[in-house]
Length: 328
Image (cartoon, helix red, strand yellow):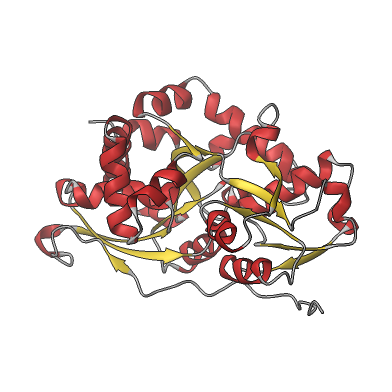
């Protein structure tokens, strides 16, 4: 008999940090210290892996300490308390910068890793009516689930939503304690090893005509407004890493696999769920308004989902001038 799930709180961030200080100086030689959060997947870790492997932190005078988190909202919270200076978020957390809780300092990739998955035999979103669905709230898993329900003419009131962290979803789905989940790769791939007949009911590309799914790097508001020099140095690191990643994808996958202690083939499969953007593309999209268009489309979604109360000008939270201005 399936055991009912009580709401599960989001896991506390893992502060057993992976140190990526490339020069080991700990702030010596005038290097600016930075606390940087990330998620342990290709989107969240690849630029940090490149920066470490290519000595970009030292090049730009940064002494960095990295900490792994399970999702973006936890990193936004840590930015607000000053425990982080910079972090990484997926598209589902983009409403938090839009509400003034952080600044987006660099776009990263366009994600296609999100899925609504269900137990074998489920034929449609409509079949989930009244069923139990696990989701990490405020994440891209939450976003893909909301979009899929809306497309099916449903709302979250038609199902039983159980907020839970990523690791709990893996165990709950594999033990069949939940009927479905709003989730993402590579964790979905982990579930498939135990539940190979799971059903994918929705994916990002199903909504590509109305919503983009950009991933991004964020900074605390005070870092951008009160320590601009540090922000410029970190963005310069990210820019160099973006260029290297687009020019040397195989080497980037290898560096990311080493950082995450994962098999390269696993990281390669994860990378296939993202569109890697070049530096010239990101500069061009910043200048021609494409990124503003992405963010406005996401804001429309977040307004409909109740995360925002109305339109927000992307220029209030995406620091495009900082990103393009960090070019050397």
